[in-house]
Length: 331
Image (cartoon, rainbow, N blue to C red):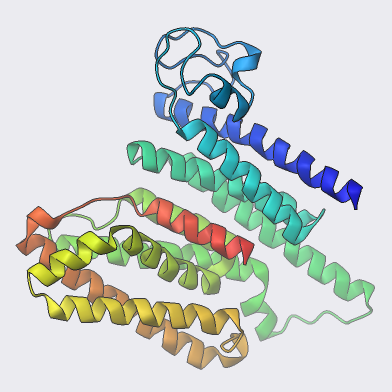
């Protein structure tokens, strides 16, 4: 028992250190600097930091959240990213144990934190980060497929290239996930041109969805996107609902809540395996209904934004997708 606790503490501390590095990746990606050189420095006075200034979380607390040289405030981003990484790494280890799964999920988690970090800080998503995410997703799928085939061979089960296998193996689901992510996000994004004359989402959000599709496959991606919308809306729920009520836009309000309720129900049905690949007709039907409700909700919302531009409030959609992905990883 003591050894397990010690291992968990070690993983948490390792996660904190990796989180410190992810802060560097986030900030230097935005400043177009190398993530290796020069050494860590104060973003205000540019003085190189001593080693004791770089101890995750502890240094921030010891310095009172200020630079030891110039006294300028240090962004709260640093300890938040460090703690988030440490906590997620620990939770994923507790779920998967020492396995190939935990290694992949740690890498995926690190990439998602960087993607959300740049998107939140400057509303920028770097293509290279999403390409790496998709690449890791494909590698994960290939590894899972290879392990499954090896386990079948080890158990003496004959391997057959059936139609079911072709459609439901991890690699096929991953490839279809990329396609689904691109198609769904681009349809929703380009609907903005018809309503308000601009994209509803940035192109970076499409790349994020494609990367998540590669990691989770198309089936789980549908639930993640529905959950993403729910998370995005919860953040701005008070402002959003108040605006709809003020303008007496009952049609949008009812349609939107219908979409949210259906998305939650769709996710619950998947979680409890009440709809699976064996009930593909029901699954696709429900997915289409969810997509239609989502598109109709988007159209009505964008129409309202065009008619009442003073109600526009922008928040990048990428962090909501990342948050939903973390929930999917942990569940």
